[in-house]
Length: 201
Image (cartoon, rainbow, N blue to C red; front, side):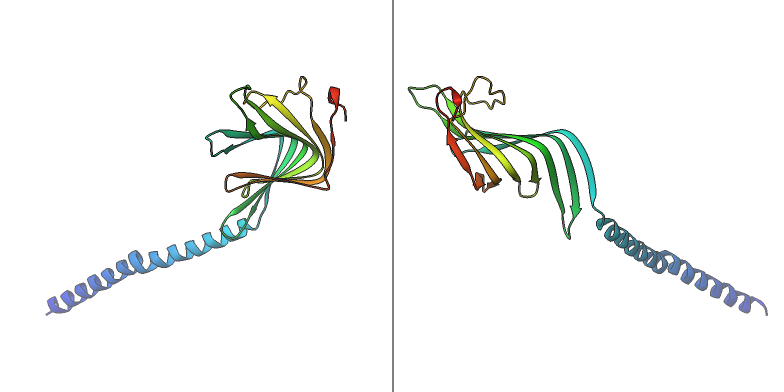
């Protein structure tokens, strides 16, 4: 007499248990993971609003530029101090470095002929302050002094004690960038003087 109701009750409990386990395993898990994803996105969005900064000392950067004749021009930037800023944007991070007490050596072009040993023209720049943008590989400086040298060999040198500049000058603003593999240098309000014998203007 009690067997049928007991079986029906047990069957109902099994069905209810299966439904409850299904709910916990599928629906509840999906809703939890979705809410976790929402919290993670919110957390990332909030953290992306923060700008990270880092102070560095004795910074050195070397930029190599390949030429059509398979030679490479070397550019070196050094600064005593710098402030590196990482500013998150919508889909990327903008990295800008403010440089202080800057010196820059740039090989502008190689010169070699059959009758003469190899040499290159080098531009030397000094400024109290400059900015380097990593995304565009652009360097900018204000109130800079410039000098042009002809240096024998093909390796970049930063020791110019035995070399004399053939052109010296000052510029209110300079900018240097690499566009499509080609170095692009601009000097605004540039005032130059040719160096005479002994390296004096």
